[in-house]
Length: 592
Image (cartoon, rainbow, N blue to C red; front, side, top):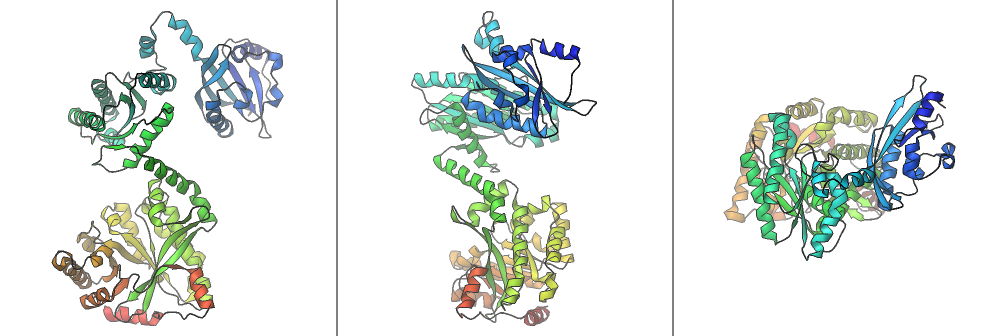
């Protein structure tokens, strides 16, 4: 343990400033090295009542008078401060004889020359200073001038002001028979604006926003909550009135800004019954986040369905790694049909989340949250590895070893070297012992993803084929299609979107012409074709006549897991007819 000199110790202990000095022990514990008289006065105790040897691991354990609403917050931040040695910057309330006081605590870590880790924390009783100044200034004017409650750049109230006074403001509004509406303004692409015009111009944009909000909502509560986010609490006078104000603000900001800005995203919550302001603000923030990247959407009103969606997304994100570790996310296989022969040519690997609590969660429900929180690269590599893991049991069961396609998100290429990772996985499972090489693995990228390809993405796509894998373009014709795909990338196959096949006879059979034309262009360039959504014999005959080689759909095969396939084998259901490797290679050579 570290020993302060008598002079230093006396100086700290006699200080009227509330100070704690905490030492990290070698056994991963903590002890109070010093306590100032100012802290004892703040806490309302005597020095002989403070047991420094049994301080424990949590700062909040020392305070038995913390406001119940803030205990969890203090515990989380305090533990993080102690264990990770981060900076400490927090406000909380403790009970005094005359009521709760707002305390502001700041702390940092320092290492002594002897190697001891010491944390210094100072505390400020904000309430005490407020009472002194309340006699010489009106409350509102005071808080307009006090940096603790005012954003220095925009001169609007800040988050500290909201935490202390929003509840009273809302209660007064409700007592007058008014309905509060919370609007959370989020400036779109603020980082890009700063990068393009500089931070000084970015600050000017924030001031402009603050001034325009004040002009439009001068009788309302307006605050800058953080960075490029503003909160307005107004009196709700109807949905259209609220929309009109939001659109006016957005138009003014876009027209008066120094550079080009797309304006705001605004989450709106109309209070339906009394709630704590923090909950209402959370609802507005949630509505804003659900707008995501829809640049044409300015505002979104919160609904109960948004709350359900939020909790669903949280469940997905919080349980994602557990689902992978426990094998809840399984691979289902759907066969590709060789239209000419009726034989199976290969499989697409599809994911199904079989959750013990929620039941079967479809990709439509879990993929969007994974994309939103940038976890798709972990998911796609997991599916790729599961496919490789299941080659051996397929081989031992006598099932045919066929090519398998695995979908990869465009996001993956921003976070990992895809080729390096899939090479690592393929090498790990020694696929050559099953008569396979890398050409048995097909990497599928949606055309939407390819349309947004960066230079780095281009390079990785090139490496996929150079390493021996096949590259297919998925969802061709889904709304993003461009013939530029044919000239910009070396690809092996395009998969025509299922909606083209489902609507063959719409608009005087326009899709028949479109499908036939795409197939002809692809074949001229040496690119194979597959059509998704095959459900009828009529569709199969059309694709055969049009020259399409492969199809995928419920007419031939529904997705199923390996367990289901093994169950059929155990009761003697024969395996469908599949192409051999030799037949596939022969047809490939003949096609060329």
